[in-house]
Image 1 (cartoon, rainbow, N blue to C red):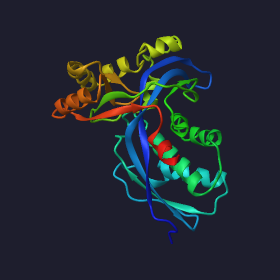
Image 2 (spheres, rainbow, N blue to C red):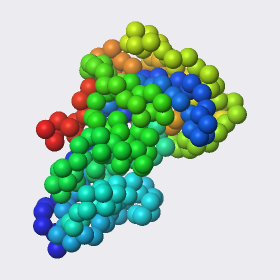
Image 3 (cartoon, rainbow, N blue to C red):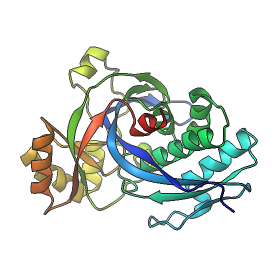
Length: 281
């Protein structure tokens, strides 16, 4: 029996404005430096609190089995951590293509942790929620903290920064990329240097995975070449998603309209504060 009506919450996507791989660590992970900007667009998560401790997910379109889905794993993790006797029914409106490097699954998990922490009255702070989130995925903490940020180490050392409102066109070539395979590729450049804050804010940096993906996936390389007509396309994260920085909202919408006949595309805005945090506040 449900106690509360279902409410819908944003799970915003992110882009990596650059992504440098600094070296491989003894534990097999890599040290990176990257700049995350949150977007005003992403998935939506519906949550209904249950008076019994059951946790379930309504049917989804993206083919991840319920026990493996980050949304149900996040809910169970929080339930165990906070020793909660309540449950939840979770629905996902999936807009961010899986494997696109836009953090869809990580953001979904962060939304579940933040919202259920509130609805279940767990009382955990961002540090504890970030610790839980990190066990689910390296990108979860940036969504928990809800601010655009410079990330170091394995991506979990975060320094919030103000980038201001920015405009982008997102392009989704129709294939996912497996992050693990890219990190294991012997051709990956692993010795990029650390950028200074001044260099970062002036737009220096690149995505070290881009040459690798262009070589492995000719269709991706062709897409990047075609998109140069509208600006400087950039690969985001370790996925197949591409963003093109735009001067203003009008030029973003105009470019999106023009590209629409070729690819799945949308105009979005980069924001400093997560739409989820705006709603929670």
